[in-house]
Image (cartoon, rainbow, N blue to C red; front, side, top):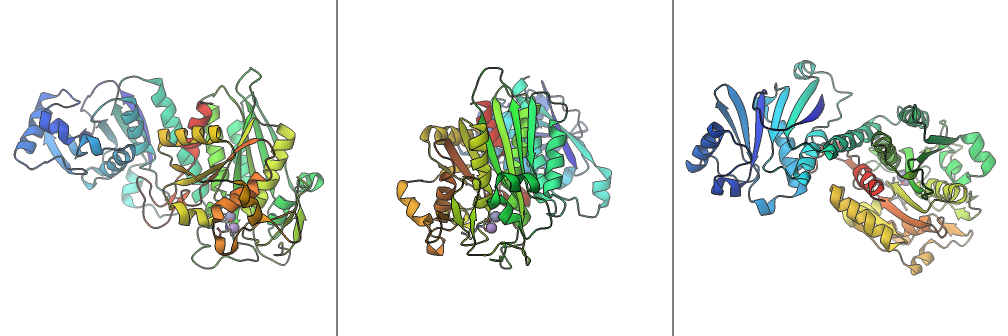
Length: 486
Ligand code: BES
Ligand code: MN
Ligand code: ZN
């Protein structure tokens, strides 16, 4: 089912149901964000008779003059967060009393810009579910689209915000689908269809042949056991006519990470179609950039390979010389993301000379151990860039946490047989930091930041916050907000 949001200037209460968000403070002060007298009296009656207390998450269906309402309480105003609003809206929209409602009005407890943005996210990101492969139930056949009307003052930001949420869901579809569907060829087609008809965009695509000719052997090595084409796809978007320098986004696109000959065990391998989540986030940010016509100069790049096993697969202990000419000891074939990124980064730094480069990747299990599922790891060689990304993160609720990079980490990636190795300290100690340090050694003097979304890109089990099971689109909102504010 697809949800569509639109804004209406004032409440109508003429849809199948109207969802009304209230805080306990509003109940106490007996003053609300809507003006309908009848609803106000009904709400206060329920409050006075203690049937509806205003506790966080409390809901109450009400019928008045053939109009249906769902009262939803947010609790104390001071306890409301941008996350909790989205969770509440997600829950309200799945209320079983109104499962047949196709037109829904939503009245928030206040109408400031951040509340309305969170409402849009709660509706569009909160209601996403991956059910392509589920048999259609009777319910699903009945309702294919739901329209949500959010009562809000007119504001252009809200149209853009809906686009940003739709791109987040677009990325989620790419990450959720089977690895043998979302191949390098599929991602190439996806990118080409996004940029089609856009005049300020050029694209460079390196396939196996070009990658070989140019010496991107690290990317090629990762793909060596696969029957699919490796690719480096680079989209150059010129949104500013000024001589503004380019910002490059580089995404890890491992369409499936089996671990290679260092094969992943049961329990770790099952969700590894998510390993192109970084590339997915870059493609989501590209979609936003095109639809929002951002007036910035941006390079969107994705390095795509499949880390498969087979007799031709790359071997642990191999030494490979990549695009930068540094020799790399392949100490573990499962540390493949940094290899693909190292070649992609060196190629872009050398041939496109961006002012700054941000890479995004489902890079390390160690990052999941360090930060869990709700915060991406952020590592940078430039404090100003890191600060701006953290601001974008907190403004979008696409969470990230700053982890350190420091000179002594160099020792962790020293090799006895090559210039550098793709593995850090024994036992994966500080594994998120040593993986980042490996990447840093390929950026040269370029301002650089790295987002590790291994924990945040994909929800296992049932649901987390306002996300359902599966891909979250981690990074799409953060990167888009960052690009908007360069
Ligand atoms: N794609 C994985 C990281 C990952 C783990 C992503 C969990 C999503 C969820 C990455 O390629 C990997 O396998 N990393 C290894 C590195 C190790 C061999 C140094 C890891 O984290 O175990
Ligand atoms: Mn791996
Ligand atoms: Zn991987």
